[in-house]
Image (cartoon, rainbow, N blue to C red; front, side, top):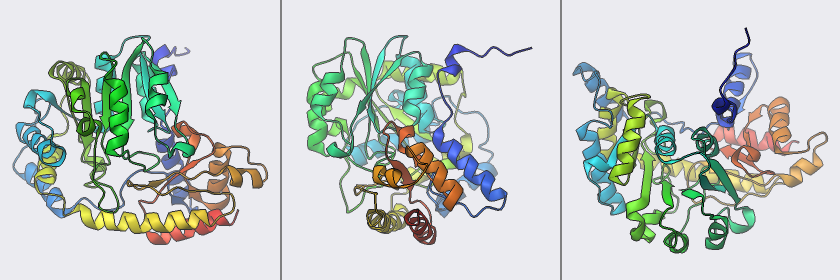
Length: 392
């Protein structure tokens, strides 16, 4: 019997970053010399004091179900973090802890969007945004912000994309895949536009907040336009900054009514996040950010090497990142001079097959002619990778 799949699941495609990572792992298991620059994951171990908190939770038998929206200790740590780091005030009923930042955004889409609603997403974007919008029955409206605008959406671009169907606007700063960060002034200009349209909810994805170079200060759109507080959902988590990707803890803060609806969605999907991970996240947030500094120093050193190395390759142009552990070079010139390669997807396939370097085509992030390269790996691997790319 042929299985008839739902229209819903057929709207979406598998995550390209996870697919590249799985293929790289498979080839490596087959004995190929593969360097995986496709995965967005710190190569550092979770700091010891956070790991110990997880061990303590197990030993203290804190291994049962918790409240769907998170343990009180973690919600209080998140509230404290928002106050200290972002000058934002929230109450416990405005916080929802989820199984990673991906679930936070999925919960938001399912709780907010109806069939036919439109969601403005600047491109390049994190790969999962459009597909989670599609799963909610809504329409992603992709607004390309290319290299000429430093990969940032302008106020005019935003306003031109707004229609009477616009329900949600998504902004990610610092950005995956580009590493660029909006200034407070740039966010204020976007905020001025949004203030004209009171029915638009704003989702600010701040997952890379603490991975900024050169002592740069982080701002999100609420810092620039506090008047948006009553219709802004702030998304964050511990995965990237604290090297806790596998612990699966993300969190969201925003209007009580919307958080309550997101909690209802989560209650009928995963229920609570893992109890052990929640107790570890309490320690991560409360212990301060000193453990982040060595990682940040290494990411900056790797960034500088990668940007310089890529820009020395004929046909590659790479802008500097403000943070994260990604570079998003333009490779149109490289595509043009490699025989048999016609686009960024074919270039990524060619690089993997011919050189053993795995990275993600820019088209997966909504911008063709680019590739995303993660420098969350050793300097040795990066040196080999740049040398291999240059050999084409």
